[in-house]
Image (cartoon, rainbow over all chains, first blue to last red):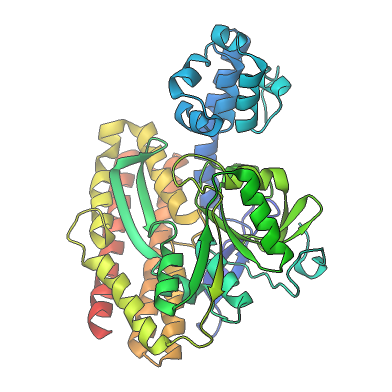
Length: 135
Length: 343
């Protein structure tokens, strides 16, 4: 790939630049900062949309009282029950149990704090879900 | 984002120079060696570290996707570079996060740049859509200003800052490849390593791994294995899931900091630099051939994107994708079989 062929498409990168290796006019490799590539954007969107759709489903389910807010926030942080269990220092079967609204509602402050800390949020935020879809 | 030249904070490394890199591990190691007086390009570090590889492990699922990698395992570059160049790297992990943060602060206060393993999801300076739960990200901390760390993340084009709370979370995230607070820095670096000896050895090792492992999942065989599986994905999983699997392969190739075409251009840059340094025309030739293979890998990515966008009808598209992969495999087989013998 030549330096002039390095894609500079609008992409997921925003202000970020990606380093690409390409050949300059003397045929030597140099690092070119790329603004992104359309292909990358398409593939990233596919993965991100999938996650977003899942999170959105869980948000609606939480509001209907079918799952606990923990299920929503866990998905938002791209975690599985196993990963959340490891991060919070809780048994996995307990995490799975707390994904249901009623066992979650009975949790004491200390347990909520452990989950909140593992998910990088406050206890107050953990016990709620947003009313509207998150962008 | 702040610029390197304005980093005059307490506990910051004086005259720290940031360089933009394609891959986090090779970039981090290059930065750490440079601060100790050994100035090697990222490509050289990547090549000497034997970062180049291919593997396809359909039984090992990561987030429901078969593991496809265009490189060797995390930390392999660090390990190989240390072994081959004779660098003594001090590494520490911590059970207690407070202790891990204190140890980092103490090193920074002495003016030592420190390599860190982190989880990308918790690093706020990355664009939101690039933040996935992945524990194998490497970067350099070179100072602290108040409650913020000064970070030279090789895959960003300039230095950044990271709040202490986020960095702590990123260093002590759990899961696969959990960093457990890993920090590392060179204790001794040779002033002039014997590249005449090291470079052929490194190239031979990579060539052997690409064409010499008699298992279907590694190297060139792995690429062919992927091609075979990929053709059967639509019938096996349905078009939607199959498209997602193709998307995952392409993301491993392009999105995850590879310098383009799944490290093919980066390794090509290494072969070129090594060949010119030691006057080995056959390496420079191999560099050109691998660059051409890289272009072919890019075509694979473009085809994949067209498929995902629905511009291609599934059946013929999957055949074309598999053909492109087989072509890449054939080209790389030629390149590395020759490299194995000429070295």
